[in-house]
Figure 1 (cartoon, rainbow, N blue to C red):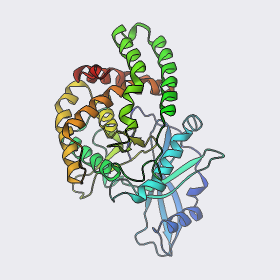
Figure 2 (cartoon, rainbow, N blue to C red):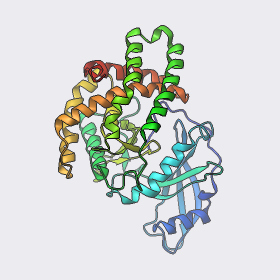
Figure 3 (cartoon, rainbow, N blue to C red):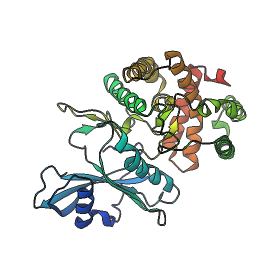
Figure 4 (cartoon, rainbow, N blue to C red):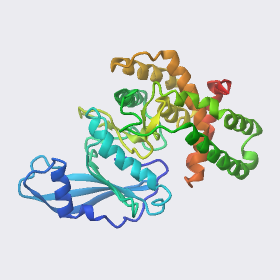
Length: 362
């Protein structure tokens, strides 16, 4: 797996019971990954630094017949500092891998061998396919990907979005729709966070940006009509920065894989594109790649059978999503994400808002 943005190395956590040989044997057999053999030994190979979770690479040794069984796994579990405040993130990710992923085309996400969220203790874990030897992130954080890497990433994103585009299961067995009351309450919460955020920043948040935030909050109900139309929507990743994509290593014939699904939800698809480019890339890089990547995304949608959605509609949705992402730094600040992340996101997304004339949407 990958190194998360802004991550620090951490003391290895207490491993859950699921990594004991007997538990792993049962999990792998249930997943159809192990026939008659059994796990004999489990060893921590490496701990990948992350912000709000522990991501640990485990090595496995077997006794008996184990042909085709994985010799390493990725264990993902909550970081104790965020276990309570971000418990829903764990619930979300376990639900994605256990309910949605089995119904998706192959080679989009890592295979999940086991996942569980305990509602009482709020402990959770995932046992995922280890792609360390075959895949890698495009570049170490905070470096953006190359043009070819970005094209491959956006192609994978479009392929995934197309698989859930206006799917009949949306709001039924795949995610839930937020009602108008839900989104109204969410915006009221955001407005409270924003007031405290603006007080904290003082003169580091310009009057021009304060005016835009106030207008945005005032007009949010009208802006949300796009979401409440329930048209041209999909399962969005919610945290689609390029370091959540694994690209095949040189010489490996495979597809780009997407991971880290703790913020997935039904949404306008361009939410992911805007977060990837407008929130994460500085102006020069975004301006160079934005148009070609939107073209690639649209062409991939069409190639995968999406109809009735025009290139102009994609541009309009992208601008709408860029404007919505002025909320992201505030939300990140509200859950104690480090300033090295939210401050840079704030500067980058406002540059995109200015470049794309997003204020016109208000």
